[in-house]
Image (tube, rainbow, N blue to C red; front, side, top):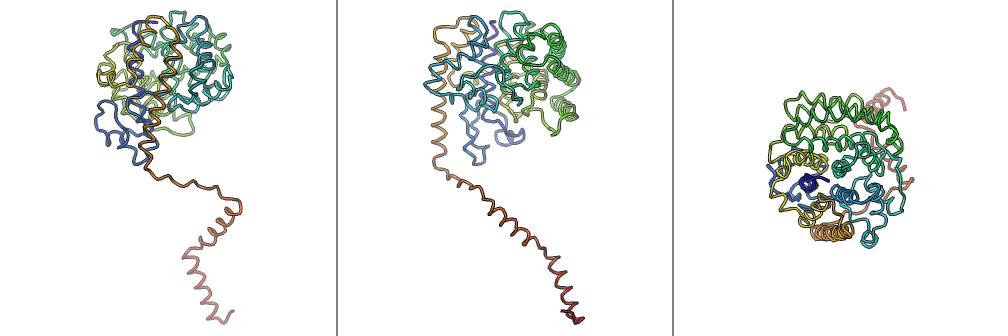
Amino acid sequence: MSDITPAIIFSIIAGDALGTPLDGMSRGHIKSCFGQLSGYPDPEPALKGKMDRWKKPGLYSSISQFMLLLGMSCLRKGSCIDAFFRSMTDSPALAENGYDIFRYPDGIESGFIARCKDRVGGPVQSAYPSTRILAALAPLAFRRTAPAEILADATGFLRLFTADPKTLAAGLLHVFLLKSLAEDGQGGPDPVRAAVACAAALEEMIASDCSAQVFASGANPGVLAAEVRVLAEILALVAGADSPGAAEDLICSHLNRTIPNRITRATVNMPSALLPYAVAFTSFYRDDGRILYRAAAEGGSSAPFASIVGSLAASFSGAAAAPEELLQGLVNRKRISTTADNLAAGAPGPDLAEEFIRAEASLTRKADEELRARTRHLKKKPEKKSPSRADREQALARHVVESWTKIDKAKWKKERKQRGQNGES
């Protein structure tokens, strides 16, 4: 690990905690409800009465939980991916507290958790994308191992969750970009230019030097290299943008040529859109002390977006990336600080993962209790009963009869009147 690790860990977790309550909201809605963000916002004013979506301010999600567990696994001997999976399946703390300690997971995270319950290891075949798992890869960027081993570990970790080549390509680029930015430090190249160079080197690694490792992890090297090339093309485009908005437009217009459903913002659950936009966003605001606030205010997939921006910003600016009020307001700050120090020092500590999981279980229970307290006076909507086939047919027949418009009825009356005048029955 590296001495940059604590700063990156705190920036990822602060970005996650800042963006989680705002997930799914639009940029305009966030601005109209909160104005300029300050500290961790309570999402209640922006929920429009939908309090079932409320999330505790300052509390991070499964993004950070998986990231910290992976970091702890990297301290063990042997394959860190095998150690990560064993820490999930063999954990007495998880067996005792249940796997629901993971907060707000998306579909592929939930699928992985379900497989851990059944002790089913190995690569998955489902190809759903996920931007949430990208930030969790950060600890792999700071392992003191060969690039080929980092690539194999990152691919293996991602394949525990999804077979989506776009997620794999974005995850690998994120890891190697983090590594490059941290090694170059504050005087290094612009993040976009660094990302373009990393993408070119990564494509070469996948296509030739490490194709066997990629194939062994269950991914197709040719397809994966092609997806990295797409990311390189997008990054080359945004290198010429003069604002974050212009960069976002370039990303969306480029991707809309090949996807069935058009996108109008880059903070969607699409790794090939969100990662390049995070890189461009960091490039524009790299010296701005409010970069995490700005990232969370972008809306959409705000938690993964702010987490990735936080990791990139901290990789070259260190602790300055996360404002002090965010660090102080972070739930479970002391334990995270101890964990980050252990990861930086390469010291696993006795039962570090078990202690972490038990603490997370307690945090999740408290958050659930607070949500129930806030929603106990709300009236529950009656459950909708699925109509039977007979009910559906009756509704359709009624719809056909009632669709007889006024024009049709007037025309019928006119024809009937004419027939009466002509002596017709």
